[in-house]
Image 1 (cartoon, rainbow, N blue to C red):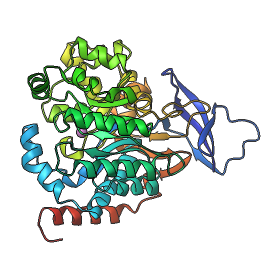
Image 2 (image 1 turned 30 degrees about the vertical axis):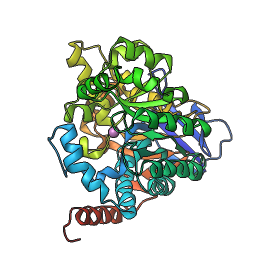
Image 3 (image 1 turned 120 degrees about the horizontal axis):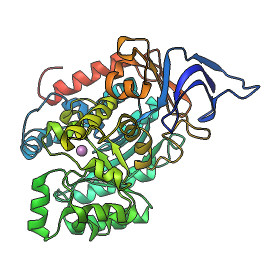
Image 4 (image 1 turned 45 degrees about the vertical axis):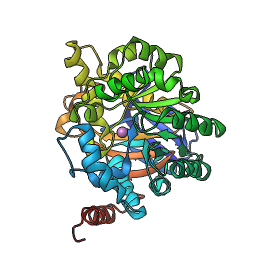
Length: 428
Ligand code: NI
């Protein structure tokens, strides 16, 4: 389908906002500014009072954890995981994974997310089905717990996920291998994952250096800091998306740069779990790719990427007592362009000719968007995601005028509530 977005304000990769059109042919942007002559649009979208930006990329989440939203809050990370989250996750069945992922998909599309990196399991194929049906772009991975008695089975599921879904849905779905973290995966297991991922030419998605305790325990157990320890297993040879990266020293940052590791920064989750503040301004200065993620909905508690953009812009200012630490445009790029790079989504993340048409149209006809001195500033500091009007992924309209086109929203809410009540032992 060919789409013409007419007379909109359009955010260019340079940060400049231009008035004009965006022409989409099939899955790609073919013109920005003026539409080409003789462009036959199947659909014309009126861009009056619309701000067109690249779709948000959620670089680290656990989609089906939406079912655990508001189930356990205000706890220490390890208590939260061992006493509340892991026991209830053990009870999750195939249909629960689907119900949670579908709820996540509704929330993501309605808040302007067009791509997400997910680490969860079992039954990751259910998340893949949701991505396929919803139209979202997804980088999926079966979370691997090396200390679990069925670690081998989980790895086999990761391989099966890769074989069945990598490159599926017109290339919208790709698959990585995801050893959960160094404290759940002993070094021999990490080496095994590195070997298996290497055999499939797949990349890695892992939690790294999230808490101070993780770093201290790694030093105690292995005599090395987390990045040096994991580097010694060979895992970083394959291309890595590392979530959190809060507790870093000079050596860690050298390793991140040496292996071109892409960082998924999760300001909301890090603040809520009191994990610490990642050295994001320094990483950005040193040309490390820093993307933004929501983490799971039970540690955030939503999947709203504009909120993460807002938090990233504010958190580092106050942390460094520097109002220039992460400017508005840089925060928006972390949520869009850098996210696409972090997920290895070639040809997405920018509004430019030849890029994939993953676009979000904000309706700027509300109080938060007036007066319009600077649309990028309004986006990062003033607006919220309720003004997301239209979402396009791979040239397909997933939402228009806030109406979802691929998902039955009411049914998803009903099924999610039923699944959550069943999981916590209440009557459906
Ligand atoms: Ni996580």
